[in-house]
Amino acid sequence: MTPLARRTSRSLSALPLLAATLLIPAPTPAHAEPAAALRFGACPPSVPAPAAPARVECATLDVPLDRHRPRGPHLSLAVSRVPAAGTRAEHRGILLVNPGGPGGSGLPYAVTKRAKMPESVRRSYDVIGFDPRGTGLSSPVSCGRMGGLFHSPGDDPVPRGATAERSHLRSLRALAADCASGARDALPYVSTEETARDMDAIRVALGERRTNFLGVSYGSYLGAAYTALFPERVGRMVLDSVVGPEDWYAFDVRQSRALLVQRDTFFAWAAAHADRFGLGSDVRAVRASYLRVRKGVEAEPVAGFGPAEFDRTVYRALGRTERWAPLAEGLRAYLSDGGVAGLRPTDPFDSPESRTYEAANRIVKCADGPGPTPREVLGGLRTLRALDPRPILTGLEASACAYWQHRPARRTALGSPEAPPVLLVNSAHDPVTPVAGARALARVLPGSRLITLDADYSHGVFASRGNACVDRAVAAYLDDGSLPAPADPHCAGPGLPDA
Image (tube, rainbow, N blue to C red; front, side, top):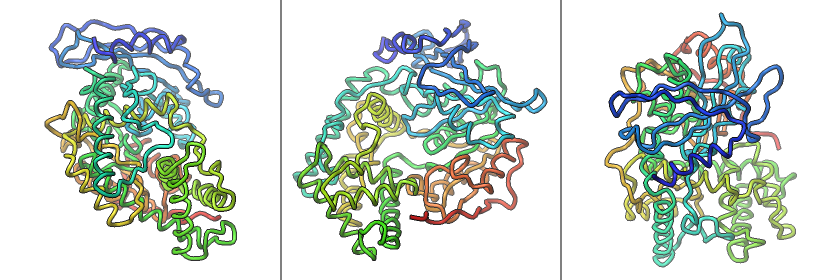
């Protein structure tokens, strides 16, 4: 039995209020899913209570670790449900939701995301959240030390010179070895494809004919994988802030390039508000202020806050414009008094939840395709350094796949001509999932439409940005299946934020 499968019992004990799952044995072929019924009960403390009169309920579902061995080790999926608020006549089935990652916990997302959805969607759908296998409370995986990833202060994530590059590759090799040691036999099975099969097991357990789905960020990749596996079971599917149909390392490098563009936009924005932030009145001056902070914490880390921690803060801030002002204020505070309190994230990077996220993120990415070679990793780093001496490399998680113990022979299949058209949504200037990826994925999802939110610079659009144009169009599609016309419409976005 694998460590992940052994942790099933511990996962269930971590959910003392969840009722046990009733399993009905399946004597059918090895590839068939067992029929199951979910018994819903109270939720663990990590799931917030929705505003009355809505309620949330939780359950667990056992699924095979390896679907070719249905009688082998199983793992436990944590599932949540917020029932539809409308009448029986309004009910349109289930709407599975996924918040992204890979590695993000989806159990509370049924509550938090539903609260922002248009009323018609809340009335029509039972919103279903779940922790994907290996994350949250679904038999979480561990990679232990992860090659020193959680050391504080961490090594400079931008290696410069042959010695630093060799050290960087050694850290990636150590990270891959730690994941192999921690996850062991489960390593190939914490993947997008297996999670998509888990989604279908949830559909079966809920007695639904089709899966309606809202996937954000990595959730868009997961949704596209579901369409490839189960095209005839796809209902209404919304893919928001879209990961493109490319290998994970190529995506990571493309994201890093987009973050450089976004950082320049941030510099220009801070310069336009020089009276408030005092970082400089033009892009060059703000950039110089930024680099003084970056080089300062590199030369002399403050209370465990060094260049790796700084780059993580910047990475997180650039993805949402509401975080730009706090970032600018944190830069100003450091230049004023050398303090890093304004730059330090409120959520600890080395918390148990973060460790699970970081482990699952890399395990999933490396299970989804062959991964880069060490030569390709160095080539990507050098390309980014040529664009800027201080690029932001925090999101290059798939670099570790260069040394992965189980290197799959093929990439995860995405999309199917047999699936119905789906609806994609993306911000025009999202640096985390650049809009080019949404356009590329739309081409492997025939008949699908892409709504672009113009003049927007943030990650996450539907029921997130408060844009009435987007929210109305998505709600209309979820309510009655109507795709927007004309094809691939644009909605007016908010532009850059006020200071």
